[in-house]
Amino acid sequence: MEDGGGIAIMSFLIMLAIVVFYAAVAWKINVKAGEPGWGALIPIYNIYLHLMIADKPGWWLIWYFVPFANIIVEIIVTIEIAKKFGKSTEFGVGLIFLSFIFYPILAFGDAKYQGTPGRYARLYDGSRAYDTGSGGA
Image 1 (spheres, rainbow, N blue to C red):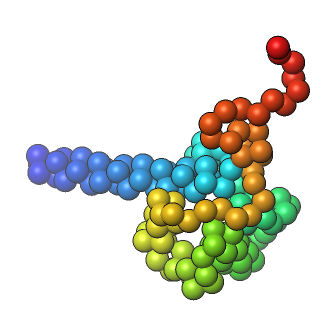
Image 2 (image 1 turned 45 degrees about the horizontal axis):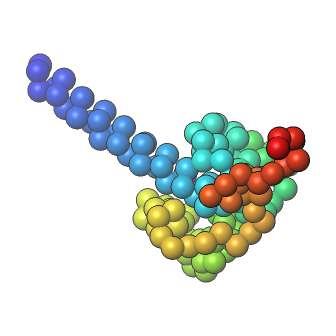
């Protein structure tokens, strides 16, 4: 009986480590694209940010709720994200079929985002906040 509990705890810890790793990967990709990293943790909003990174219109989010159309849209968006980071269509196919390898490469590698900068990138350049004209001295 005690061995079953140990296996369950170990399985849970391994699963938790995988989830935390993928959250970090998604966070890093969002930040590289100038979107908020925390957005990767919010359901539905993370898909919207995925579309923004791919420079696709936000209304495409509706397609994710249509069976079979969601698969096609995700393939298109994923390949477009690869291209926005300066990668090839083949890398995009790798993102689709071997995501556990290619997404960490995209997140932690030297790929630079080449699409339209996200709202956060326009407000913050990584070293200091831009003056948005909201007052101050």
